[in-house]
Length: 432
Image 1 (tube, rainbow, N blue to C red):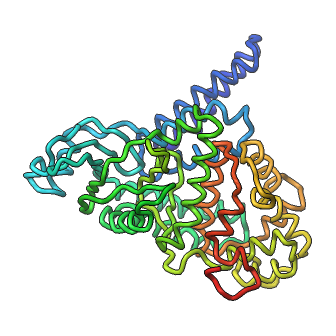
Image 2: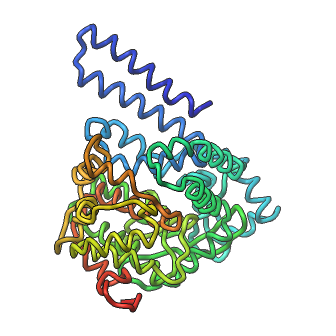
Image 3: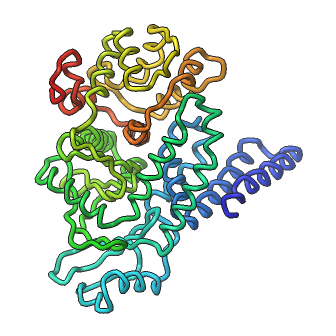
């Protein structure tokens, strides 16, 4: 019912706008006021719903970078709130979860516990505390009923499958939604998240660019980790100097490409609320509920096909894509057209250095979805293997954040160091 209020609210404001335009109110002033009210309504509804609906809001707050500026601007501030905040859980509910998960004597585990949440996420909120041994800790508490809410949201997602089929006829929507459902439901298990975080923390121990808080305690719905403060990445996006934004972008890209090789995992929730810049300049990484398990590292074909595309090996690219399931069986593909589809996407790694920007992302979004363009037609013919779903989603999410940062760096060098198959696409060693 709350979700249904969103389009009604938007339609109502549009009707109001029409009336005011007739009275002569300046169009741009009206538009800004109406869009800002609508944006606040979106934040209010998605924030109250938490769960899967709030995850939608967090995804939107990344991908607003691809929208035209006059549409994106009113939503940017409201949606960015969803990366770090949501209406808080009542104190009695917080204490109830702690008692169920840690026992009636849960207070004895802490020297101090702050009842006011320090941050909120899609299925839980974080409190600052002092562990019984004096360590500063973050205590993540799952919202009561979050599991049922998320499962319900995902059932609604499966009902939307026919719509996705219209947008991308060759996608195996059923398999993709099953894969997405399994990955999202993993986020409900804080003990699984703790194991993932320990794996990341060990892999990045004493790393000069990235730091992961250590796990202190875990149960199904409560996770206690080391408290590492930092400047929120959302603040770096809006207020940071170019140098600070470049440094943050470099660290984010390094995490994305190095984690599969170093930890056998991919951090799969790249929205700004999950990152901060610590006092020592390192990227602090939070929230490991969503992760892709890659014991063999990133698939070598990702690096190989990326490099072959850059090198203009059209026939090899089409053959590789067909072998991985991106080209449907029996579909005749023009190899040159495939390069024209893919190469502009790889502009950030085509040269020595590149600056990500909202403008670049909007240009690419328009190119790939523009009505009537040959590129958009070819893009719609492509299939999508479910095994690549999470990799694609995380890569696109990371690119969205890099565009919000407007970060400049030598991105290609990161791939050459960490992405298997990229430096040596013709070779057989997946670790090169």
